[in-house]
Image (cartoon, rainbow, N blue to C red; front, side, top):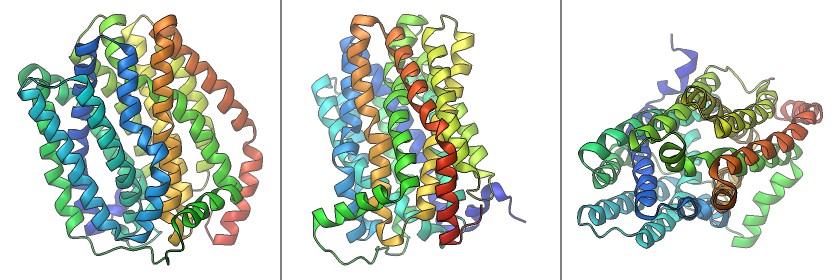
Length: 413
């Protein structure tokens, strides 16, 4: 009998994707750690760390809504193949520049923008392919949870790999590992059947408006995404400042930076394990309204703590809170959205989650200069606590709205 926590793996297409994506995501996190360390080594600037994080993700805010429209028009499998190939090329260019000693921060900024644009198309395409991989909606919540688990397994393992590779192969070795890791996931996407939404094109702006109109008129979706925007602007920003905390606060190097990120990854992995064991989406909205305030408290503790023994578990709680909030909201949205709008709604989710984070990273980088990185990050934690606490108090209203919606859709609670 299949373990309920892994029930979506009984579907062969998703099983192939799961294995390939696991390898690819470890490579991704290896590059994330190496790239941030490279930027801080070259510039010594928290503002530049924030700028690179901003350029890497700002296309999620500006491009994702249009990407969702186009993904719903075309074969999602082909879109994913193209975007994964572009990301592979970006990593190969970084490796080549690093090995030849010609890597400069302006090149990193330009390549970060290229990666962000590709990712803006890749995220809704891959998310919209999940129902194809698992044969419908029944195992979709579990597939979403396991897909999140892949990302956080990589966050847990990748930084440790990056720390070792930085010492042995240097920064270029980390970028090369990421480029090669795409060879594991591309074959899994190649063998998928063609996948189109079946929607008739009616004009780019009109189709874009249909996605936003659905979110606006579906009040549970609107409330959940509002909370996600606040969470994403504040909590994940710690990632962009890890080199500063590792070197200046805890007086370590790249291995310590990897340990800090791995600690957050361990908490996120625990969060995805919790989600994967859930049999349905019943009660999920209650959980996601509580995890953001929990993460806000933990982020404040991490920011102000001078002790590594306190900082590491605090980061684990932050990682747990961010992934449970984000993946939980994604699960609810994908369970209630109509199929012909799926990629568009997923792109709005991506914009709210990954697109808002770079604005927070940029703001944090600016504030860290006059106030110090610890005080600035603590301020973000307090702001998140106040704002998401208000949303949590409104949960009874959200619960009633979801109960009515689940009833109309025949979704058990």
